[in-house]
Image (cartoon, rainbow, N blue to C red):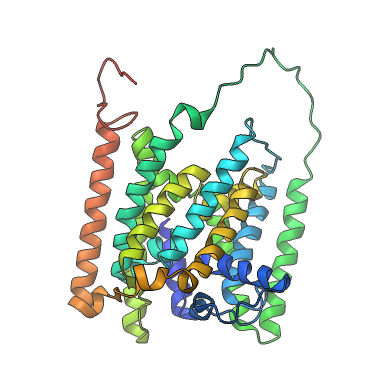
Length: 384
């Protein structure tokens, strides 16, 4: 997480954009509509996030595809790819529904677990803190939902015995991963050699982010959900450390190079979007980053999650002006940046103090609570 924080700061310094994914998901939805003859040229949301070019000619596009490819390369090199089907078919519907809600909420808040969370806080944008609080509330509701009997369904019991040992041949996955890695390196070299520097940079950083999230099994869903279900706070603490490192690195880059921090609107839409996002990612079983590497691992259930994300984000793009979402939830807000409001030094100190407090609370929670709120370590019984 610390390395991801440093890389995200460097990426901002080079491109003046942040590590993000759901904006490109929304553009993909717009391109799909255009393919089927829908005119989206007058949709205000697409004007806000810009639809210039295609996913293959945008830096945001290569951040996304680079993450997929980087994760797949490391999975193949370690021989961990395997098609995995959910035991309950209802998981496809639940994942799709969760993906739609998360995609809608992320774009309503103008960012997901990256742009409105992990890379938003180091930009010192106030909207990120509103989003984090709302996401925590949404994941709490989601944890309550997925623990209900009607969501889990009836358990399936199967008879069976010890599987006979089968001698497996040498896996070809590492070779496939090496070939894919070399081909991708060739693509990056092609971009740089042909003057497409920003595309090459995005493809390079995208792969690096994909490798990091897969190797670290980084999932923002577990950072909150595990707190409510098991009291585990490992990912929560790791993310806090990553954001602290990134905040320091990003502020240095802002001051040295005179860059303007990327600030999003803080409005009722930020809170409502975060709440929906938190609920959706727990229903889906993973956030956008978690979904990406798990899909590359062969977990088929995350394909409907990915599709649901695109659809949910596209529905929000339509509702933005056609259904009055902007006027109702966004128009009253304004972008607020802590650097502008209190100065660079104070902004950094406040950010690090809040992150430190969050780390301390997470550590206390993990030490003293198990299996949800109200069950402390050392208790003899636990009544569900």
